[in-house]
Length: 449
Image (cartoon, one colour):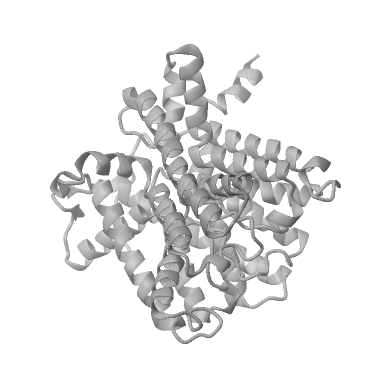
């Protein structure tokens, strides 16, 4: 009996349930995608391709080993869209919504699980927040779907049913930062179309800001002085990264005939902006990533590694983590004992968490890059790009993912899963219990640097 309770106790911590929930969604998606009805050919896709695609969809990444449009049937594409929606909203967010609808009330344990998934600060607000998250997500996706449907219908002569299908699929994929597209070249054929590119880009930005930040902006967008530290850091760092990324891509790719060079000036600006938005972390591309210069790859690596906002659909270490590290370094350079952001002091626990997430992520990317280099004949810059894209749940690719070995596909699958749930979330989920030290050791200074 004790052993049984010991096994069940392993799943009492919210992070463990979140990991188990995402894992279950991946397995269910894999099972559905292995069905013959899920492919255009009517033959089973094979467990590895199904597992990779399911993980990429649930983890809202967008990396693929087979072409989405030509390989998967309509049933398979609907399964992928459903997995993207589940992964974007979060397993526990959906579970909480269903509990509210069925039972009309929440137990304490369910509140804790939903709080861990949505990053709400007040546990009593979980039900209200989850309802707002779901409604807001569906409304944003509906708006994007209507605009895209109209453009496909009126601008490209698609039949009404096909236009609606394309609009809904890409709206879900964009808002959830997934990057799955139903064309072999992603969105390259729409590189100069502002209706398509700007709609997709705005949906990606809104979904990647994080729900707490979006809700606060909706309430206080006219009063920036009342913004919380989370909102200030997220909005500020996001704006800086978007502008910096756009300028970098304009500077490096302006004369590249395979990317921006063939476009007119307005087209170059639109394509550069779109390319700067996508590493937030959506895997759409309107220019050929494989033809970009290595300097642009490196800039994209940095943007993908940072990612988007916390408690949203984006991946990466998050802009809040990057912003907090910047303030920590600034305070250290100035010799200040405390880290201040605006008129607020940053807790030491948040500083340690930011440092831990960054170091764990850098180590994971470095080790994975080394392993994938040993498994493939490709160059370091290509392999690093794919690894960071998988870990950051981005989905951009230089074109080598489909050519990787089965072992390489398994490695990228694990990276996507870890990148979605977070290195520290996975670590705490695997820990058997919290260990609190009941004593302090003597302090000793260590030479640093």
